[in-house]
Image (cartoon, rainbow, N blue to C red; front, side, top):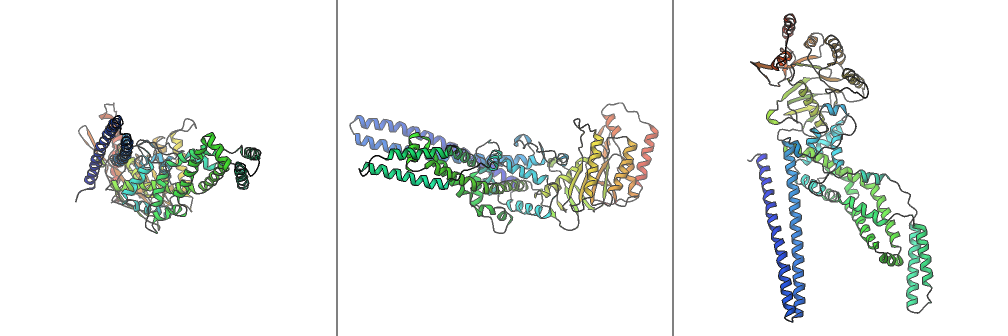
Length: 625
């Protein structure tokens, strides 16, 4: 059976061949149109020169019909070529996401606000998880996906509903691709931005009561028409000019402040055209009943977007007739034309103001879910996590970081960590401690967004993911790195006091790295003791090997480590998590290999060796298989 990669390459090849065929057919249509024009001109000229005027007229009409048919056929071929090219571009971007080819991906949306946890885990911004996942054609869909990834307090029912929706869309590749194609008007088009439309929806203009005046003026205009006809047939004298003047005077006096209905209808129609095909497609797609997608699309069934949007298009079309001054005068004489369509426009706006946000919400939700479904479809080594609503649990096998290429990725397992446990991770520089912490956090956030995780299996409850990994100082606020970290860790202790919120999964990298060795050790010991036994599972990385001795004092603490191997002048890392304290250090080795002068105090070196030896003999550690 062919692999998924082989099938995708074949499909991509078929798209390329179809585009080539359509381009060939398009060129043939172009030559055929030119041939018809030349042959038609020569034939018709010859017929008229020979005196066969009737045949010349019929021949000209026949060539025009043939030419129009060719134009229509050519347009269909061009449209098919355009749609196929857009589909090819969509498929290529999915492959680029799989290969982490950042240059081939659209630029991510600008970061909204400051989410330190999202930045710690590379969830948002350039070369982030959101960047590689986001296949949305609209800004709203992109922001919806980002809100799922950065949800600070995941709720089990909400997360489960997202996952069910994403799972349902995984096998619906044709639906996902067509939705993306209809949402993208043309190749290379920027994401549709709803901020202008949102401002219009939020604006509550004061609208005069139109219906009574519309009825009155309609009766007045009918009277004017009757008086004009009566005068034409000689039944009444010419009193209609006076009534017409009165009619238009009332018309202008009452409605001179009404906005230009044509301009507004045209502007709104052009705005809605960008996403109308997507909304109508969602409306007409039939999801199985009682599925998550069926529930999500409920607003489309309550009020069909196609009907409302067609109404707006008709208003725009009929309003366009009055762009000519003569037509405006004639139509408004027969009927209060502009007033009628102003009334209809305001009624349509009122209906859209009530219903459009719900339709857009459906579209954005499906786009965000489709991004995650495509990610699952294009990544064979991704699984949907098992989400637990009962006692807190966090177990994973084969956990990998989704932003690391598969060929260099190293996977690790986590099991046996319970609420209140502190997992202390020691290891040398560059051994993989920070990446491991990010791997845990980013997979949990991906699970809570409803997507598949980069793992063989993951069984997890809903945790508030708290990180202290990439804490930065602030020149504007006068904060040093150390004080910024202190504030972050204080926030963690405050979060643990919220008994009505989900438990915390804390990821702390190089705790108290910004101060001296003695105070760092004292502070780290105190903080580890404060975390042990609380409503949290805490993973803490450190260079301080002395901290590992706390395992004998704190029952909830478990030691694990990463290590390196040195062979001659070559240092290698296997990035594999192992039980127990780290038996090696490499800072001086790295300095020496880089050519820096290194003075090693023999007594200090012997003391460090004694610490490591004593920690290695402290008994069998709790294992994370």
